[in-house]
Amino acid sequence: MYTNENLMEKIISLCKRRGFIFPGSEIYGGLANAWDYGPLGVEVKNNIKRMWWDRFVRRRSDIFGLDAALIMNPRVWEASGHLKEFSDPLTECRKCHERFRADQLEDAHACPACGGELTDPLQFNLMLKTYLGPAEEKANEVYFRPETAQGMFVNFKNMLDTMRPRLPFGIAQIGKAFRNEITPGNFIFRTREFEQMEIEYFIRPPKNNEWEEQFDMWRREMEQWIADLGVDASRVREVEIPDGERAHYSKRTIDFEYDFPFGRKELYGLAYRTDFDLKNHEGYSGENLKYRDPETLEEFWPHVIEPTWGVDRSVLVTLLEAYREDAEKKRVYLKLPPKLAPYQAAVFPLLSNKSALIEKAENIYKSLQSSSSKLHVAWDERGNVGKRYYAQDEIGTPWCVTIDFQTLEDDTVTVRDRDTAQQVRKSIAELDDYVKEMIGW
Ligand code: ATP
Image (cartoon, rainbow, N blue to C red; front, side, top):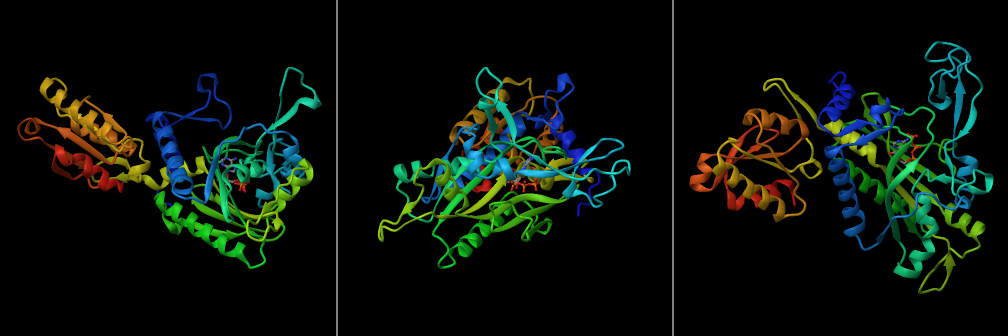
């Protein structure tokens, strides 16, 4: 467990102070559990999404990308079972009227807030409803998607027709999902609007146990992903979800749980959805959603393995794992994996009132930025260099490059490392390669 007390408070405060994450609609007193990503937060979030998309879509020939509409035909949710099944048990305290998810309470009868008596739980549907068009009537009712997955199933036929994939193959999507959660909270851990990264990986029906192999393959991919976020494996548990507790579509589910400072909770999930979705969508839509084997010409519904990642929970664990307090040097730093940091490098002219230093530093800043579109570079000329280092440490910038008087003579700069606070002298010519090599690009 964490030795750092009040870690969540520290992270939330750092996020606000340094422009990572702000409370949503703050000038109006906020909106419960809504959060806005600021300039640095959006960089971390985009870096995570880019790493995911690169790894699972662009670097693989068997997975195809998709960006489907958030609002889908409501029949989708009939077919998927969400209208009927996608609910949590809601209970209310008869005394203080606070509401809870009954399945998350230790004592199903006593209110955890005041000890009052709780009502019998009712199933509460988590789908967020709205209306399309000017009339608020039943015929215009639609839902914001509660998962990105259904976009993949309803486009299955389009994928077959356009990409002509051979099994096994996957469809991947990153996008927003909405759930009218009963008890949102813990910062960006549980919100009503959040982002997911999901893959539907289609395989042959399980005559030959192929699904178990593919399930294990995805399990390993997820373990590797978690390691690449910089997460200490000792804080992750893989939990087999027993019969009766799995989602309505799943035959096997593993939750990847993480020891958050507020308890052990789900980070990601891996589920075997069988042919549940394709079969139901064929039934409801009347479209043939079978795959035709090009050799045997046999037609069947592929089965599907679904690894799913929450983007916001990924940002949260990345920040929690990175937070460091260095008592000796009286500094806080974020030990972020360099490719996930908001900036990969910062450039400082030693003094802000010496035009020769500024000019030289500006050239280095521009050349670092343009040499590789992947490097995001910060510029700072305020205050003294020591303070600038500490400011960059706190936002996780791995390397600070300082241009001093020696630079003007021999074209070398100092490069200071965030984690060790050590400085080395490098020539300007080797700077770009040095940073890229350290990042691992
Ligand atoms: P939980 O048990 O925490 O409610 P879940 O089992 O309902 O989660 P899934 O339906 O498996 O979650 O959703 C896939 C992923 O989406 C989760 O592993 C999580 O990372 C993310 N996620 C789900 N609900 C939320 C939410 N309300 N806020 C932020 N992320 C979420």
